[in-house]
Length: 231
Image (cartoon, rainbow, N blue to C red; front, top):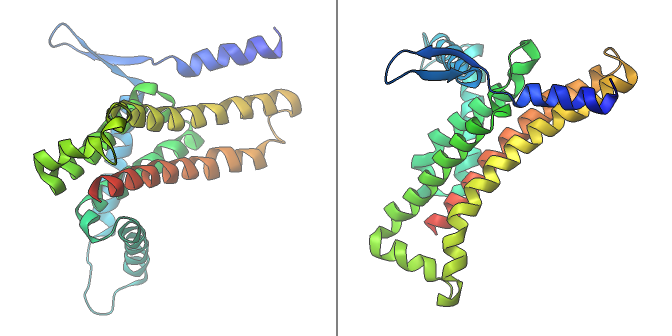
């Protein structure tokens, strides 16, 4: 089997969304592997949150609390500077999505298949973000002004502004999915050429650094779209 054929086979295997089990209601609801891994991530993050917020103190906080406050405060401050005071109510969502995507992209290191390799998962994230983006504009401007905003800065651009409603979620979805899948393809090519040991430094980049960068890019673009909707 040639390198190309072997890579194609592995790529198809990665793209295949296996059904782990089926819930026996409404004729059977198949539960994909990406959903199960997402549940594992949710459970792990929830448990970690409970552990980290135990015994918090107002005076003389411990080192664990200081690191936690510095991390969350840094994330909160980043999004607040980016979106302004009017976007503060949406910051918890952006932080939650950033943490989830970051963990989802890194979870492959411990043997799980990243949920972001499933197009359905990235599409769901993009859909949630676009719904919140449009809601933020509707909440800020009201129904009448929100509809009028599609004709800005001139009525001639109305079709393009409406088209953006479909382009933005597609862009967010495919950018995240494509970059994660692209990293997998590059790593498999490197492994096929130089073997399984030498690519370790590349793994540090594609599996860790690039995974975190993609989480940053997703929430950064979401916050920019939201800021535009609020202005």
